[in-house]
Length: 75
Length: 150
Image 1 (cartoon, helix red, strand yellow):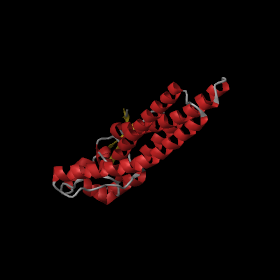
Image 2: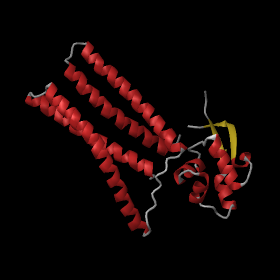
Image 3: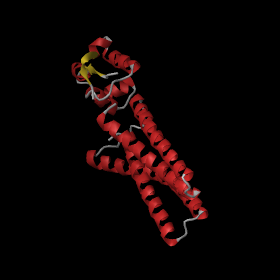
């Protein structure tokens, strides 16, 4: 079964939320800053629970943070 | 480098040194003709105690050292992110899976030497050798997953 990449707009959303730092977002959603960095770089696809927590931290629906692109195959 | 990565790097360095120590001791025993069960069991004990004690001390020293370096660089109190989140747990799980796989192959090969008529001493030597190799390869897998992504 092929793996597909989940894209995200975390960097953009942080910018539009008063330049929220990675550490601030990490504290809000209860993960380490390294996990936020990995998510932003597309190196980690979060669990559904974490994805919802991130969306909740920005106060937007889930599909405004994450999008699924079946054409883009990950490594 | 995160708290977890530092732990894994410290573990990798320590177990590589212990593997080196183990191989040197085994070759010394073979050369001096003292490769017997008593010495081998003693070496087993030494390796296991070293593995536990040195890992604890090494990990503490690594964090103290990196904390001092961070404090000197940033001139602020070092922040230690010692929480383990879902990504850390996933990487740990995958690293453990790799380590178990290597360990299983090692146990199989060790048993095979015994089945093909080698003395039990060879089997025991190989068991601890593959145990250490499995730990090292598991650590490498974890470090690769932290860098490459999961």
